[in-house]
Image (cartoon, rainbow, N blue to C red; front, side, top):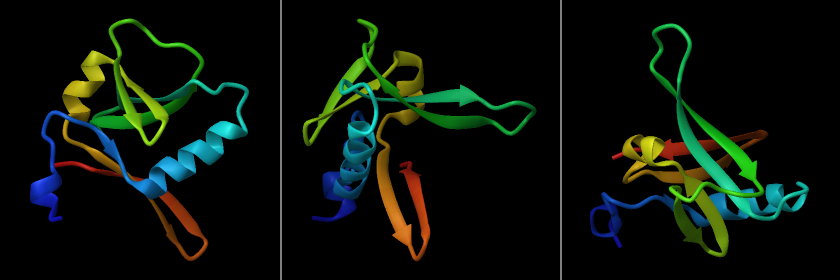
Length: 103
């Protein structure tokens, strides 16, 4: 399936590699609820930064996505920036990186 066919402009997705990475990371934490993705204003004039945190509970207004049994929470303001994004986890040699693939 091509990216154009699978692209959901109103959604938020994680690749299977990202789900596996976050599930493994989550199992070492004291919480098992899920992970929160957010967008925060960067200091200075460098725009915005992505933030990821493990969460034990969430706000009622959060958007909740179930990605292969991994709960993902995004607050409404951050979702305006993350709408349509796919998160991937890439290993290249000894380097590992979470990548945000924006439309």
